Image (cartoon, rainbow, N blue to C red; front, side, top):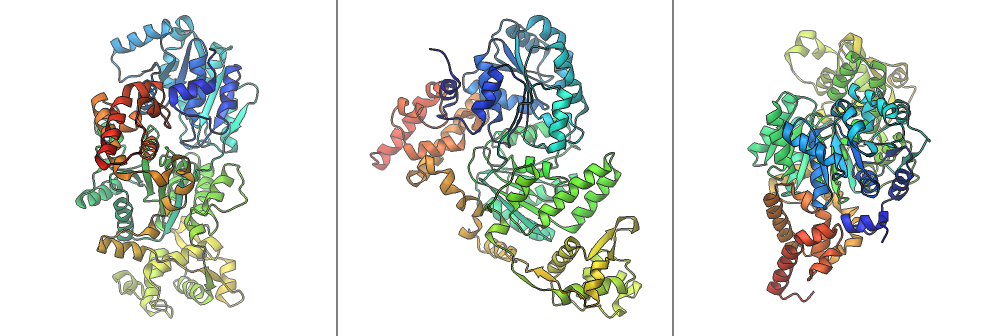
Length: 623
C-alpha cells in the first residue's frame, strides 16, 4: 500500500487528523517547493518536515540552534520508531563518524545539526549523502529584526547555491513582517509559499500584574506553584542576581527549584536543564538564556518576574507552556523600574531604534485595558473580532472612576519639585514618607507633601503608570529619568481636562490570604477552568479517573528512567488523560488511543494495559 501523510500520522504518531495547515505544508515539500512556515510554539511545526522526510528518498537535514533541542527531538522521533540522529560537539568523534556512515547508506531519515556544523560538513553532505531537503528551524535567528539574531544563520544562503535542487523549509514561531521578508530574502526561498498558521494559543491564560512589590510577587508565585503540585513551571527574570534570589526563596519554601543563567558553567546549566526535562525539579528560575532548547510538553505555568524586552520574546517564552494543548497559566509582572531598565538597555544597544520600538509595543501590551490575546494576534498580523475570555482583562473588565484629583496631586508634586524627581520619590512625597532624602531636599515642606497618604504605595505606582500611558507625564532619560509634566498634563493640572482612571484590582490580597490558610481557590484556577471544557472535550474529561491518571504517570516515570529519556518523550500528559478516561483493557484498544503509534503500542502497551486492568479489577470498575 502506498503510504500517505495521513497513514504515517496515524501509524507513527498516533494522531487521527492533521492540525490546520499541516497537510498543505507537507504537500508543498512533497512537491519539492520552498516554504516559510510560521506556527506558534506547540503548534505542530515538527510534523511538517518529519512526515515528508519519511516519505521522500534520502535524508532530511534539520538545522537547529541548540544541542538540547536536537537531543529532545531526536529522542522523541526514536520513541516513535523513526531513525534520527544529531551531529554535534557533544558526541565524540567515533559517534559522529558512525552517524555519517549511516547517513551515507541512507539509514537515517532525519539528521539534526547546527548551522556551524552544517557549513563545516557541507562538502561531505554534497559528495556522500542523498539530501531530500533542508529544514531551517528557529529561522527568525537569520534576521537582524528577529529577537534572537545569530550571525552564523546568515551564512545559510550558501545552501541555495550548493544544493540548487533541494527544497528548503524555514520554520519559526515568532516573526513580524520585517522578519518574514528578511528570512525569505536571506535564504533565497523560491516560489513565495508562505504558510501562516493562527498564532492563537487558547489553552494559555494571559495575566498581567502591575506594580507588585517583591513580597507580593513571591506570594503569588507560591500560590501558583501550590495549585500545580508536581507540575513543571518556568520563571523568567531580567538579571542573574534576581534568578538566584527567587530560586533561593522558593527552595527555602520547600519548592524543588533550579537556577539557570549565562554566569553559570556549561556543566551547571546542562545539569539544571536535564533535571528540569526529566522532572527531577519542578521549577527553573532563569534569564532569557534558558528555553529555546526546551521541547518539554508539560510545562503548566510560565511566569515573567520582570517585563520582557519585546512581544516576540514574550510570546516565544510563554509558548513553552502548554505545548501538549492542555491548560497552562502565564503571568507577567510589570512595574516602572523594569521599563526604565529595559529602556536603558535599548539605548545602549547597537539597534537602538528597533529595540525601543519593540519595547514600546511590549509596554503597550502590559498596560492595555483591552483583551490581551487580541493584542498579541494583531501584533503578528492576525485579527480577531472577539475577546478571548481567558485573560485578566476579559475576566475582570476595568471599572473607571473620575481620577482628576488624584492626577492633579501627582502632577503638582512633580511640578513643585521643579520636575527633578522620579517615580519613587513622587510616591514617597505623596505618601508623606519621612526619609532622609526627602528631608534634606526640603520636599516635606511643599504643599503636596502627604496629600495622597490615603492611597497605598502600590496603587500610586499603578496610577502613575496610567498617567504615563495616557500622556500626562513623560520620563526624561537624559536627566536621570526625572518625570516631566506634558502639555496634556498641564491641561489636567490647571483644571481644563477631566481624567478617568481604571479602578485597581486588589486580587493579590486574596492570594495572600489563601496562602496563610493553605487553601486553594476555585476562582484562581482560571488557566484551567476557561479552556478545559473545550480542550478536554475530545478526551471525555468527565469520565477521567484521576487516581488512575496518577498511577499512569508513575508508570510513565518508571519507563522513562529505564529508557533514560524524559517522561514526556514516552507519553504526553494529554495521552495519559485520554487513557485515564477511556481505560483500554487490551493492547489493540491501547493502540487506538490519542498519541499512540504502532511503535509505542508495541513497546509500552502491555505494561500500561496490565496496570489499567489491575486498577479496574481492584476498584471493581467494569469499564
